[in-house]
Length: 80
Image (cartoon, rainbow, N blue to C red; front, side, top):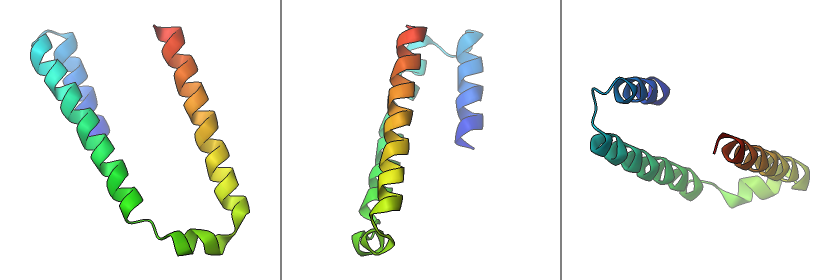
């Protein structure tokens, strides 16, 4: 639903149906809600369960996160 809503707002903004101010406010609200969702996931994480799976899956997850972060930053710089 989030992706569909994002695409709808992006299309409406592109065609000028939504003003730049409303689009900016929607972007700010979106950022806040994403950060809130990520924080909620982090707060419900059980560290004992993570410790019980061992270091290898944790390192794989950290590595994947690092790769995604680097790729995201690289693409952001390319599109700038």
